[in-house]
Length: 136
Image (cartoon, rainbow, N blue to C red; front, side, top):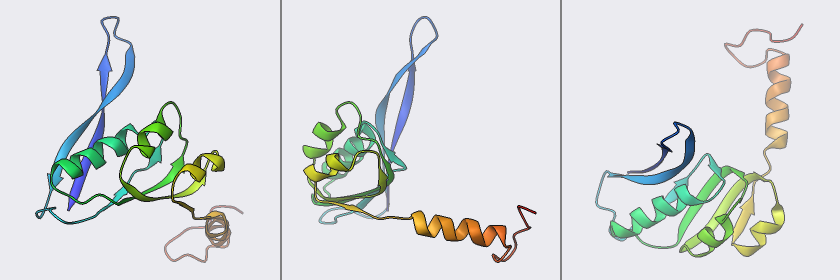
């Protein structure tokens, strides 16, 4: 089951790009009534994409209490206000820019620094199958 919210860039009369708007593309799959999803976003900046996905999910009959997962948590502009107004169960991020902003939510920070360092070291030593040596 997929719920797709995407950023749609808008153009002004001078042909310069302005901030995009978020449009819910739809929910594909089974009936969502009574279900609670995990919303995955590549980055939470303003929270507008998460807001559009959650509101679309709820409008389709999905349950509140969603979990949001994103590797990058910037929380700029009105992100805190937007996310705080949504019926979220928790937010899971890997490396938030400002950890203090997570105090406002049921949040979990997953540290992947060790995993990334280990993977880079293995690539350097060519221990991963199918990888050529990257560094001499």
